[in-house]
Length: 418
Image (tube, rainbow, N blue to C red; front, side, top):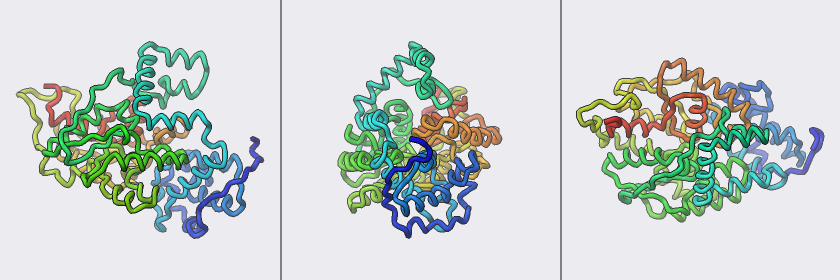
């Protein structure tokens, strides 16, 4: 399809919503893609202008698709917008229209997204990838095939972490709260869940673990425009986590998606479910005095892998924690009980991870990450706390020591290295 080709596209966004943006430009300094490219159409107000044009004409072109797809969906523009424009919801509607009415999401990518809701398939695939990594097959296959996407998976700038061959199962300890474990994070970073569970239990609460039906929240599907699949996964997750107990989430992206189930499904049941969802730091901050003050050492100091009390830790706010959930301050409440924290001077700008974004747009994601890395380096801190797996992996790929905040806390409380 040439750049002049157009195709029919119906956008289900009412004119009042599209007119809510007054093009004041307050969003521009907070948009990572605009800061990298300098293109008006790569800014929130520029994309909304394109949406308005497409909605009026009933047709789109490849350039429209490219600008919509190049949005990281960090939603930093929403925090900056004085008019309260719901840009993120407009982008979700636009991508869903593209996915339903064009070839925006190819079949192979749809299959990959579908696998996220199949924990056994995802676990088996992760083990195969882990074996391939250890045998050096990923790099060899990428070199032979000369496929850019495969080269990135093999360990490029946005490559995969070293995946575990085996993972010890998590064990429930009660039913005071649910701990949502999700899909990719559980398959690749289960030790983070284990650390989070130990910190929750340090307050005296018992932790219930979700069944397989709650294996994926649907956030990546929503970002990709696969609305029917995201709604299916949301309904399945809701059915798998009954009762009134709080649902604690340690992934900022998952938590943001689950808190918006009311908007996604449009039902009272979904709104009641969303009201039970909390980022785990929110829940802990309300119970901060129940957390032990001192580490449980046995007469020896922690190893060098554990930041000692008083070491400065840089806090990187995941976009969906800061801009969607607006729950970034509780991270500081919990970490600050044990460590000295230092703030970045970039006003909460995106790191470029964006879920699957860094795999699909590695050049822009890398340029956005460079700004974040520079801000981190200016702090002089040797450890970075980030409450989202995508951000963590994206920043680790350039050699930074990035950990989930509650991994740092758990290591301190458990006297790691004893």
